[in-house]
Length: 327
Image 1 (cartoon, helix red, strand yellow):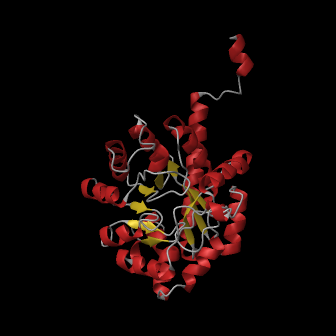
Image 2: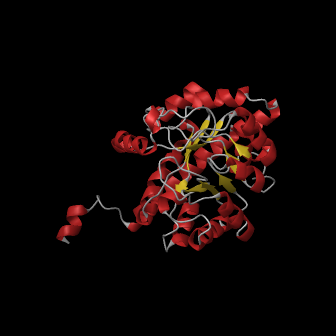
Image 3: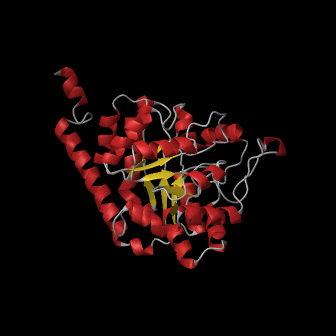
């Protein structure tokens, strides 16, 4: 009794906790409904960005910058993302958390869910993180669904687990059963050494075996593997995003320019769009590793029709997210 009275009012009762969870759920749903009601005003949706908590953003970006040899365009915080969005005319950005420890999945997602309580005000929507090595992946994915997330992010290279590994495929299968969008890093990651854990062939195998209806292969289907994307993914029912695939890489020094890595030329980008289908390409930047304003301007200057540009910049994302019509 002594300790109970000491902490009374500090530690919530189960009833109080349920009330708090319900109130948060209602805030997320109401915010999403308001965003959906104004969906016609969403002209540019960035489907692939990253942010970091204020306390660790500078340290985290410094390490990632050293690993990749490239320069970020913002400090990686939510505040700076909002400033970038305003400058670029981006109406909605999708934050994709990368989970490197399976034990931290639930904690990261509970924190990310709070971001979605004000999406109509901030224009920032977070997906959930997940890790294929988590044995309780079904419980974690049900929690993702209950928290109202629209999708999950996978980064096989950070897990050291192949995209077509049985653990990843069972996770993708159950996430698809829950009608979640699945975004995966695809191709090379310039901040990590080989092997590449999400190859074009592994994507083909997952599509053949699991057939996820809402799979997004980031970086135009496979960064630095675009010839394979063109021959092996064209015509398949998956989405790709444009993250970190056009423009120029901002290398820290000439010595950091490694392996002869290059972005897509405008001509090659347009060729990929037409091969994969303009209905399947999602505008994305990978901010802070690419500049949102530069990407918006580049897409608008491409030799694509105005209808194709509208689909890429926002129309396809709205359909996939269920903001208009059916996903």
